[in-house]
View 1 (tube, helix red, strand yellow):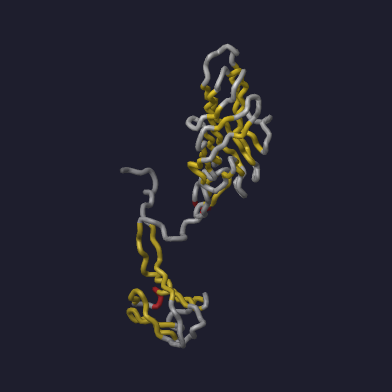
View 2: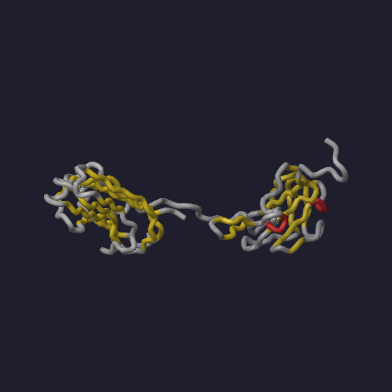
Length: 263
């Protein structure tokens, strides 16, 4: 491949450095053989020493002009020994050398080399259904009895009620269905959820029938996304108006599913 100008570098040269464990002695062993003190830059307590005057070398033996102590620090840089690699040395490339020194995660800048937590678990989540049929009164809003917990990640469901646990406020995906059996002709069927006992701010599934309509089994269902705060309680509620007899919520076809959405 031909280049215009200088050929791009595909290798990096790095001088080798050796740090010593010091003690009350004047002789140390080098990692690499050195023939001339000028080829070795020696630092004691971060002060560079004068070759020949402060130290001499012979092969891998380093001899100081006077002993140092264990509290001193000492390291050497092998000036005549550059190692060529295809990757730069650790710490030799800084953020300022990069076209982009940070990335953005969830709207926040994260410096390269830093760390960040992305995503998380969609908890809490709950799925519950009845453990039998439930007979209710006509023309009365009734909390649906959900005696069988299929899933309950945070033990947040009890007594037919899901309560938002501490630290788990946020947007929730809520899905529900109620299957109703009218013992006689049904006029109105309604199903919704209540938050802290209030139904007014929640979408309502509503079926109205002609009083002479002969159908008796109806299913109302819905899926919504709702902002919930810590401590808010969610129940599934059903209303049936019939022109005689008592409506019945059927076990199969009735459920409540709640899951927090990671945003």
